[in-house]
Amino acid sequence: MDRIMQGRMDRGFMRHQDEYENKALEVLRSGWYILGKEVENFEKEFATYVGTKYSVGLASGLDALWLAFKVLGIGEGDEVIVQGNTYIASVMGITINDATPVFVEPDEYYQIDVSKIEEKITDKTKAILVVHLYGQSARMDEVVRLCKKYNLKLVEDCAQSHGACFNGKMTGSFGDIGCFSFYPSKNMGAFGDAGAITTDDPELARLMKIYRNYGSEKRYYNMVVGANSRLDEMQAGLLRVRLKYMDEITAERAELAKRYAEGINNPLVIKPRVAEGATCVWHQYVIRVKDNRDNLMKYLDENSITTIIHYPIPPHLSEAYNYLGMKAGDLPITESCANEVLSLPIYSGMTTEEQDYIIDCVNSFKA
Image (cartoon, rainbow, N blue to C red; front, side, top):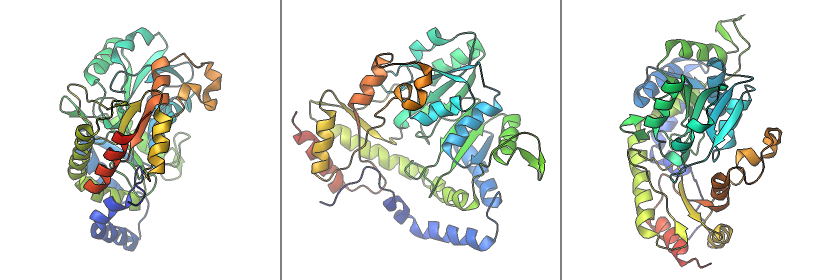
């Protein structure tokens, strides 16, 4: 058995190789490479897919996050509630704007624990940032209720949840702004860095287009100090191809997750579950192993299976956020996740033989 990588991307490309290559040649031959018809068409098609009125293409998911808080006017002196067990980019979106993250522990599904949000709300709270982690939607009914009750902005980090829903409504359509990454390993991955926001607010969409283009709505007339964060024509064109097959990609990953759930029977392993009302698109298949996670990771590596930890250092304990003054023990559930979670390989084009081999290895592991 050749080494099985944690998130290989070539097979997803090869499945529709001719379409991707033809689109790349079409863009190259067009002679127009920045903010042209591919970006315009992708924005319309992606908004339709998510179920919002507008989408704005950007250079990355991190840009989507920090620009979202920028256009919402959230900055110094403001607090934003966010879950503790997220990728650090979620928190950077807040702190780049000089706002302060206020961390909430996750629930049993690794999403923000909605029962613990209200106690964190203060007069300084201006927004809630929900991260739909690993591809599962958070419990959005309660989050929306709290935002309405306290007049808070709602931003969704949908970097891992392309196509996931709660009560039939897609992530990225609940909040003031939905933020998406199209990093190549995502379910809806580009072929380089790329991102987007979604919104129903025409003014927020207009501001986002201004900020992404040096703060300019009209060439050489700059309204604000903006950024260079334009989704380029090549990535937009290739994403339009990927978008056509999102239902296929989602269904395939659901089947892979089902096979893991049915096949893994090692009592040392805790398998992921999906909350009532939520769907999961299985960007990652994340197991937990108490006390023996690193030994399992080593055992799988010795058997040619590459795994990864999402994420080994919680943001509140990272060196970058020493200034927040938090310490080990402040978020015990978040910290236990960091010490116990492990992501198994799951990707488009994964074969039954490969998955059976992984399942057999996981089941044969002994502490």
